[in-house]
Image (cartoon, rainbow, N blue to C red; front, top):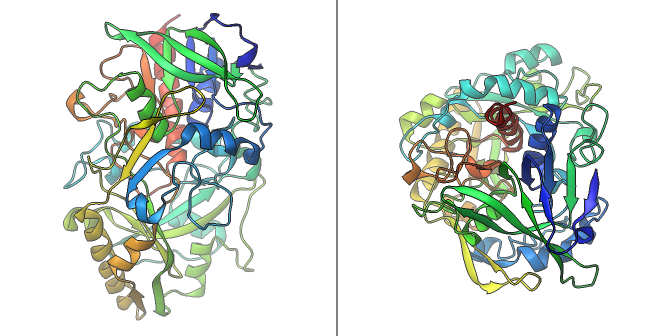
Length: 488
């Protein structure tokens, strides 16, 4: 069921068992799993009903997502909050204010996080869970996303493609599956034959969260407002949502802002800190000057069959490969992970957690609800430069051992062209110690008994895999936990 928040009268109270705030992959996955378990779920989404038309939603995004973006953003992406990729000719990719969230534009590239991502190592705090704790849920996520099984190994895919898995000293050959187009948009795809809007979930569009009311360690309700149909819009109605449990699933930037606006979960000044992404250098950073792969190896990395055509299955799944430094190399050199495309090109790496890279509240107010806007600072650290310098040298050595050669751009050249690749990570990170993070291993806010957070804002380290597949995995795990916690 889908309804419009402006049709809910002023002062009304919406009562439910679980309230989920946000309709991206994190929120919709949790909502689907909980309603399937028989729970009464209300999902609220701030955007007005644009019938999957992202272009029409952008003026609202400018009004409500704007603010100040500084640090590396100031030179590389000053319009990050609203219009990403300066001088980029494609549509906005970073953040969406529309039913379905960023699932309305993502490419579906999927792979579990590597086990080392969860480890404590120099510059990386470690997670309070291990990769093995997520493996059963990764399998469920693969089924939910209609992937071609849950085996991402290079040898397995080499057998499928009748290709060969390249072995590069000190590097892992990592395979990524791409979800088929019919299953990318979580607002319009079907679950058990129906969309989330056709399911028993009470989906309320045009329902912007204003405040999380809390005290004595519990959330007592949410203040929610709708917008009218004017251009530009203004506040229309205000109502309250009361639930047994609340799940904040608005993305790493908005999750932090909502907690800061409500002064919730920030007893140790951790909310908003450790903003990470996968910085992407889009220019020619890595140049293969002498080939080093056989044709059969190149086909595997490109996801091609023996006839040279891209492999795909009946659900539209495709596959490609990347080279990443092994866990041993990351430990030995105290660096993060990265990607190397087999044919060279750009550079894409795991940013190290940095407390000065963060989300705060700006002094300016949004023109619709009069709330403080976002102030986001993107700051790299010396460890990020070390990751680039060490990983490129390791890659060159490995390629040379195969009688090939490779050349690289300088770090300063790379840094000047870095953009956020749309993967917003950290800001409410998972930790066993409340002084070092915002949520516990079950994604519950440390200081609030009935508020949970979903999405990549809870990641304690970014890893190198695209985050959405793990976001979906964590939401499946969260739904299971909440179903047990709520009891019969």
